[in-house]
Length: 508
Image 1 (tube, one colour):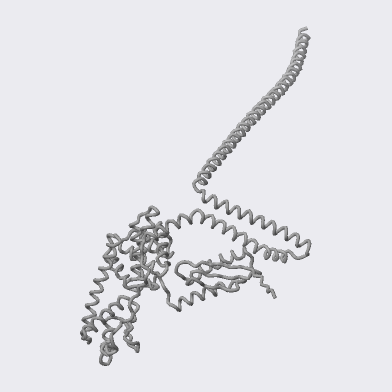
Image 2 (image 1 turned 180 degrees about the vertical axis):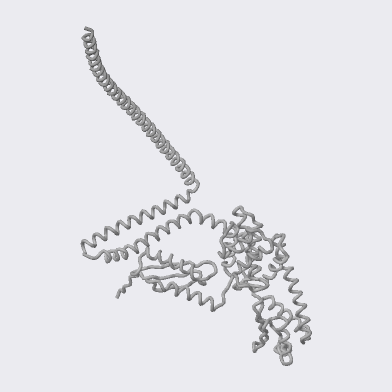
């Protein structure tokens, strides 16, 4: 009984532990399923959260992009506004410049008109080229060459007419006032028309004095030439001895020395040297005195003593037969009067007019134009810059920097160009007339050319069948420009081109 119960108990215990194991196994499987299910749910929740975060980030990024685009657009709008403001300011500045530079604007308009006409001419050339190629069958190069030849004269004629119109318009506005100022200036200055020359011929009473001047074996004339630096020519010319020297002061010293020697009668080397030294001192004193008297007469003060001496030295120098000192005084008076008419400083103009030719009487002989040399002398002796510039620019050697320069230049031309003021050597005068006539004869269509009024006018006769009226205007302009560029002449030269047609018949 007891054994049975023990076995039965053991069997029951074994059976209960198996059931428990089965139950535990079932419970573990259920727990695994529940854990897997929970894991799946967690995965889904995490995926959902990730998607939500991605969507949120995407929306935030798009919002930032939109904000940046908006900022960029704002900046573009501001830049456009600034550009518009700058354009407006530039337009205002341009309008102000245009209002100040009205003359420049008119010139630009004229240039634009010329450009427009050029474009029109180019269009006509292109049309004519096309027609020529279609009608005549010519090549483009041949057609272009023919068109250029056919339109060249027309373009020149139009341009010449346009230039004449502009010049006529300018003359209408400026010529009247300029003439008034110049005429008033000339009328208010009284000048002599006689020409003064440095004396080069010494007259003697009889030919016997020639022998005394020559001396034994020529010792007197050699001593005189050595003392004065002048070549003395004693030839068969009756009652005359020729004094030859480039320096007019030396020539005057020789003339006065000869006069004293001949008057005194004692002619020998020692006496010649004594007389020449005495006359040199007299001439130097007279030069300084003439310079001082000239400055006082003109009311010019504060001149350097060396400039005063150079002014006095101009008395013994002539240019084209016109005494240089008289010319300088005349230019000084003209310059002062013209400066007064124009509201400028007459004293500075008078000073520049008096000193404008001092470069012609230097103590040495440098290789430089007299205008530049005179300017350097004025600068050396502390003259004002505008006076120095007027001296150096009166022959266009340097650029004019003040209004005194053109006044001195114009007054110099007035003094030299008035009737009776200057004269040329006959050979040079005839050569200049021939050069004028031959220069005009070089142009095609010219039949004859005549230099009249002492070379101040050139009359050119052209064939009526060779040139038309427009071409005669162009010819006159070309000849004037060539004369101005290639020739040297006093005053101005007027060019008159004559074209006429004559019909001749006879009644019998």
